[in-house]
Image (cartoon, rainbow, N blue to C red; front, top):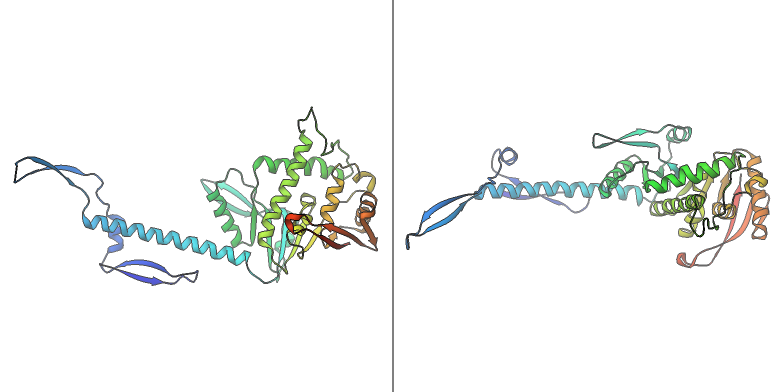
Length: 350
């Protein structure tokens, strides 16, 4: 005989578990298999003497135990689903102010081996420095560098990383390559280290209307920044400090500001910022400057890099900005889909 017992898991509404009063029920449920092969048997019809076919299959006990086993399995799945939802709410909806580290990569390396995902701490100075910070609530948002994952696998990776204080951004393989190996490494990194490459204007059509490789890289750069903005927007709450890192995400401050005008945003560059004469050779120079000016604080290694950035803003943006010591004042338009209007911004550059 079976009875229904309520067990509260602390993750929402109670779950109903099926228990049996019979000794050894669990062993019976595990080891005993219902009959799956039905065999025909002949029976004599008392009225007409005609043969009938009777199916001898599973017994009532077999069917009952199979049903009970399925219910127990479904209860376990329900528990795991509610547990995952609880973990997600814990990270995404908590109200205490946090520091959201937003970088191109996560501090964990994800590898697929023997059909399972394995996680290890990634190498790098930024990872070592920030993972060692004590007494600060941080959430790290970054690209999950793992290819060919299904939606179910992405959910599993997301839950595992959330338990470690990370929120992944999943990108298509080709888009991630065009962004990182293309625009970032082919255009931005050389330029910021005074190596001027031939980068065409993103507005130019190449080959009679066919978009060239440079255009593809720039579009991928914008798309990846948009993808990061969507993820950060779901995680960040009022009072959080969003700290964006490096040249991979220079459009992100503006994209976040359009979604959450009151969000505290900082951006720091881990490379030099080139002199005006070099930076102005970048076709997307204006878009990048406007993307960064939506931050509240922009940081560089040394004052010389900050001075180069200030010169780029005042010369390339003209009357759109005004310089007050190390602060840039400007008016940021908000698109209609984000509510419209104008934000009066004052950005500190250090």
